[in-house]
Image 1: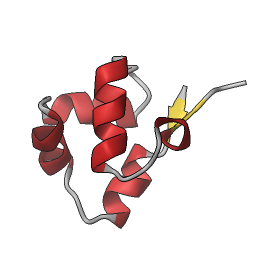
Image 2: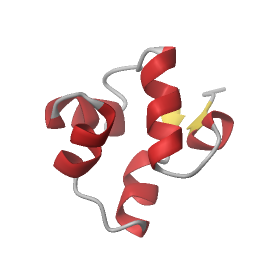
Image 3: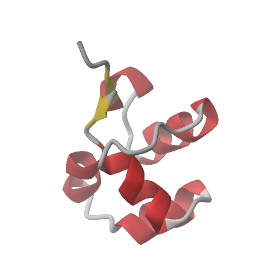
Image 4: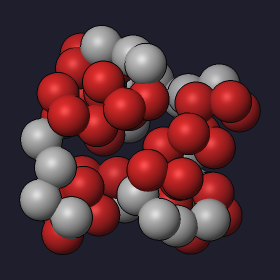
Length: 64
């Protein structure tokens, strides 16, 4: 699964650490998600979408 978290985070002027704190996870978790090395839980996906002001289906794109 691909995502646009890095692009959207940068558009909003947030660092990985800032986004991580808002979502209650570590900066390393945000880094792993951005690099497609970790798929977040559903709860975390919704938290990320809320903080990045997008819907979950806009934030995550299914690989084909």
